Image (tube, rainbow, N blue to C red; front, side, top):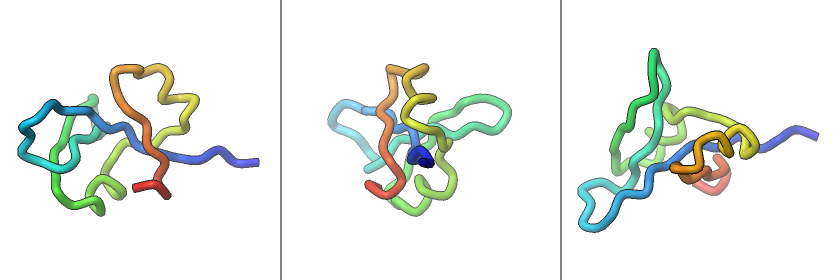
Length: 66
């Protein structure tokens, strides 16, 4: 059985300027903001729900739930 992949989202308090704040990993972790869910899907750092437990400050969301 394969595990679901998801992305890590950042919960930003209201009022917020963007619909989505998400984690990107290039050379280091950064937070990107967007209104386009397709950007989160394509550029967000992908990990399993188990791997996401290492980062409790972020919210894991499965790709198919985006």
